[in-house]
Structures are given as structure tokens and as C-alpha cells.
Amino acid sequence: MTTDANARRLFADLTGHDPVGLWSAPGRVNLIGEHTDYNDGFVFPFAIDFRTVVAVGTRDDGRIRVVSTFDEVPVEVALADLDTLFPDRRDEVVEWARYPLGVAWALQHARGARDGGGADASASLPGIDIAVASDVPVGAGLSSSAAIEGASAAALNDIWNLDESRVALARAGRRAENEAVGAPTGIMDQMAAMLGERDAGIFLDCRSLEAEVVELGFAPAGLEVLVIDTRVTHAHSTGGYGERRAACERGAAIMGVEALRDLTTDDLPRAQELMDDVTFRRVRHVVTEDERVQDAVRTLRAEGPRAIGGLLDASHASMRDDFEISVPELDLAVDTARAAGAVGARMTGGGFGGSAIALVDRDLVPDVTAAVEAAFAEAGCAKPHVFTVHPSAGARRDA
Ligand code: GLA
Image (cartoon, rainbow, N blue to C red):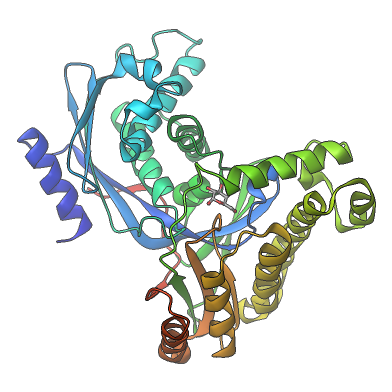
């Protein structure tokens, strides 16, 4: 069954009638620019051809009910009560449901703030039923979460006649992620899910939120992006992600800047004198990664996608050695893909598991895939899930 059909079926099972419409949003691959977003820096992700679909309808009792293919048990709450749930009592809601409910909560607030900060942000909004189905792999570092947020935000924006901009919808998604889910992430994933375009990447300045759509030209260059999902799962609401973020904030404070975005590689010798070794290496990753992102966009425009391979490789080395967010399976995937002929390869997303990407000549896709699978088998690792992705459209109404 297609994802659309799944969402429709789930909606009909829940409500006994057809939805008002279907909206969808994609997962993303980050081409380059990791852990730079919450440092006000640069990122260069693209939306992928795996999507989350929401089937949505209204109800007249001011309640919101969500159901998903993740467990098919509906969660229901009064719109007016969302404020009592988030952020303090979020643990009372099963995790997947915090995404769509969190987006509804954040959009109510955005509307309340815009209309003069009225306390009862849910007043006059119709109740909602949402059925979520997705083909974005979960826990693979491809932002299945931003896909749910993007699809929900696009749907509620239309149904509630909010008339919010795409950037405002991305912000609502991020707020849901940070406060309703409890993951201290940046805004890259939500921006990619909202702004993605076919065959293009989104070059985003995470301080100004100015975004440029940059044609990637993979297909005309005979290149494919291979995702190697290591099946090592990760969760950014726990542990390492937050620690990395804290180290970056510490580094910025020591250097007396608002965010690491404000440093260049010329500042690194002074940073090294002022900080402990771990903090310094976290800072060095972010500062050099910001430069690599800008370099990648420049190089891509001037010389085409084949020329960015070295930057992808350098980005991986920096995440492995300085930011220390890779895992042996990701290193194995990257090293093997490269040895089998990839133009460049790196882990993508927050790290501690998830996926690597490799930029590969179309003809070499079977060889690189086989080499990676063989290397994983030999190392005694679980079989990786290897597949191609294509730069695709952002959030939209489908039906
Ligand atoms: C996760 C977060 C993003 C970003 C990346 C690392 O995907 O959701 O905001 O910080 O990690 O680049």
C-alpha cells in the first residue's frame, strides 16, 4: 500500500469518513554542514524522496486526535489543554504523538502572539483529526521527525487559515521538537522539509534564516547519492547531542562571541590557547565546517558536484576526530564506499548512529553497495540498509 493510501485508511478507520485533504513533507539528507545550525552557521541539506503523509479532517468539539502507523493507538486531547501538556508534562504523551501535537501547540502560540498575545490561543480554531503514515526510515538520521512536523504544519496552516510563511512553519516545527519532544536541535531539518526543491539543495544561513536554492546537478553529472543506514539507532533527546551543544556554547562564551558562527579559522590559534583540548576540538569542527559548507556551495557552482568530494571527506574526518560523533559502523561505511570508488562520503545528521552518504557514479552503485555489505558482514555488523535518494520537493498539499 502506498503511504497516501495508508494515511487515508488510517483516517477512515479512526473517523468513519474521508479526510479534507492530504499533506506531505520529506525527510532530508544533509550534504554538508553538521552541528553548525545551532551555532548560527551554515548548512546545505536537501529534501529526499521519502515522505510523511498526513490525512487531516476537522471536528466540531475543539479537540485534536492523532493516530499513526507507528502504533495505531490514537491520542486525543482538547486543543485548549495542549498548553498544560507542553513543555512540562510532555512525558505523559507517547513520543511520536508529541510531534503533531507539538506543532499544533506551537502554531496556536504563533497565532496568539501575532494576534496580540491572547491567552486563549486555541479560541475559535476547529478541532482536528490527523492520521500519519510515513516511508521515511525512523532512527536513520534522515529526519523522519521533521517530516512529521512539516506535514502537520503545512496541513494545519491550510485548515486553520493561518497564512504563515514557510519559515514560520519551520520555526513551529523546531519549537515542537525542542519543547514538546525535548530534543535540543537546530532548525536545519525543519527548513529542509519546508523549503526543499527537486534536484536542489538548500544553502541556509541559520542566523538570518536566508535560504538559497542551489541546483545540485547530480543526475546530469551521472551521480547518485547513496544512503548507508547503519541501523545503529540514535536519539537526540538524550546524551551526546546536548553535550556537544553545551561544548559549543562554552567555546563561544570563552571567545566572547554570540555564537561560533562569529569565528573564522584565523581565531583558532587563540581558541586553542584559551580552552581545554576537548572544547577546542568541538569549536574547531564547527568553525572549519562552516567554511566547508560555503566552500562546497562555491565549488559546486563553479565546477559541478564531482568537485565537492574532498570536502565531504574532510567533513567526515572532522566529525570523527574533532566532534567525535561518528561510530565505527559509520566510519566503516564511509571508508569502504570511498575505497570502492565513491567521489566522497560522510556521515549525515546528528551522529552517534544513523546514516552515511556517499556520492557515487551511477554505474558504481551496485559495486559500492556490495562492498559496503561485504565489509559489514566481515566486521560482524548488522546488515546495513543501502539505497539511493533524490533531491525532492518540500512540504505540500497532495490532495
Ligand atoms: C540533527 C538536528 C539538526 C542538526 C543536526 C546536526 O539532525 O535535528 O538540527 O543539528 O542534527 O547537524
